[in-house]
Image 1 (cartoon, rainbow, N blue to C red):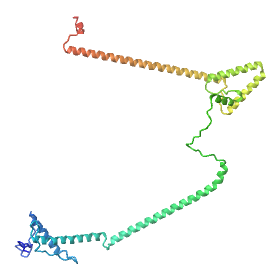
Image 2 (cartoon, helix red, strand yellow):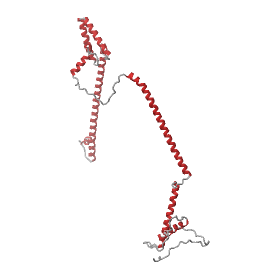
Image 3 (cartoon, helix red, strand yellow):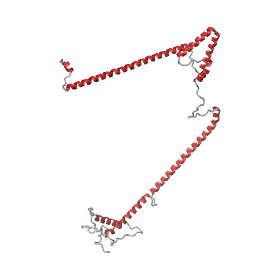
Image 4 (cartoon, one colour):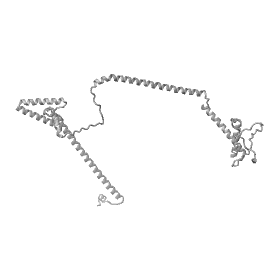
Length: 336
């Protein structure tokens, strides 16, 4: 293969004029082209590889092939020879970085004393928590077992007592269960017959709050007793004793018997008085409601008349502004 058009340039370290042999101070990088920046980066990677990073065992140092053909972009062969060196240097640096990270994490098998102590503390804390949980669980089981034994003994002791005191147990209350009887509902005549059978001594009890009716029934009963006393005093005494015993039986059952004529008259008078008072209050309220309705109607009519008059006055004022002569104005001026 033919030699490249020009030899690869070698980096030269500038020397100071005043002090021979010393390197000149670095200057700020100038804005160069893409080719100059590529050469500077390649040179920096090469010097870093030579000074700081030794070659890893088992790897061969890549040599620059001067006779390698140039890239299609037209770059010289010397620029391509330095590219593998820069890649190799980056791989070495990356490997070192990974080794340091693994060493910091403790994955390389060699742990520091601080890491070992930290792991030991964590392990001891986990074991302590496990022991505590086991102890709490054992205490809870012991308490439950003791409570169950105490409840069993108490129930066994109370069972005979409950059996003696309770006697025949009633069935428990069951909800959502409706029992429907197959019997037909009783008619009015049957209900009247049952009510008549409940009457003791063929005497209807004087109960309720219909004081007028109770008073009339009591007076009729007394009148019949007086008539019977005039005819036969013995039968009258038997009937009177029968009435008294019947009333006593009703009172024993809890029925309130109203057989006192004076109390019935007073209760009737109070009831009539309350009824008359309520009647007066109702009439007063009705009159007040009618009066309020009339007042509202009058107020409405007045408002309507006022609005109608105001509307007519606005029309007259509008006609006057237009220059019309109205009959009302002529009458006021005496020209009509």
